[in-house]
Image 1 (cartoon, helix red, strand yellow):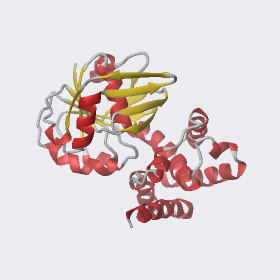
Image 2 (cartoon, one colour):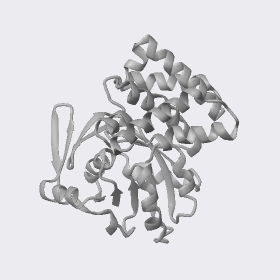
Image 3 (cartoon, helix red, strand yellow):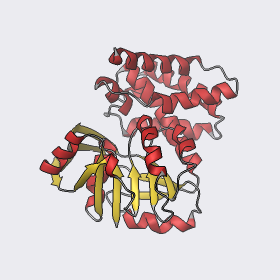
Image 4 (cartoon, helix red, strand yellow):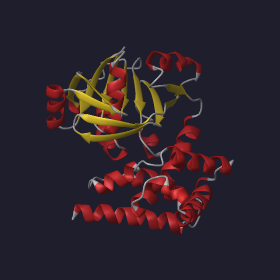
Length: 298
């Protein structure tokens, strides 16, 4: 199967490595420097004590023409807007586009695109350490849900790309799937970014855990969550599972990159405003992260 992957960050590199083993993969990246390094030296993946290297086809994102049977869009949400017009230009209803962004703000961008569209959530841990090296810090799975087609139509697609050590699971309800991941990201990412702690400390430090509970209460009200205890227990489970990891938002701040705070807390603040719900804790954390980004930009 021919697969395209747009995005040279940690998730794009991770997917390129694992999917390359059984498929013809072309990785599309934004910078010429990264493309040249991947072409000359290959892609390295470290998992545990092992490090492996593969060679793969690499092009610039501007060269993507939608020729692959399926394309994973693995850029951060704040870069997605730059790609939308390029994606819209190709009216190929038999092609598959799969979006792997955090949050839910990108959903409104997908409505005018052509082709079969999936949205996904990635439960793997990945850390990019250089332009052509990624560490697989936590093994999980990728959940995919069809954005506008029937569940049964697409069961076969997941079987084509599924492997034992890099599994895919098809979900029926994309909104429910994304909401579950959104709640996790909304609690863990901003708190770890501002407190500058690993994920596990949010539940092991009793004072930080109080902040988790206060934050979750505002999120629960803003999003009108049903079965909220299930969402809360999932947050705890993710903190436990990823205890030694740094969140992506904390890494972004430490490495002077923009964060996805608008896609995550910004979306929740919009919902809270629509419903006239007061969210002082969410607002404070949102402004704190934006302030950190502002300092980087000075």
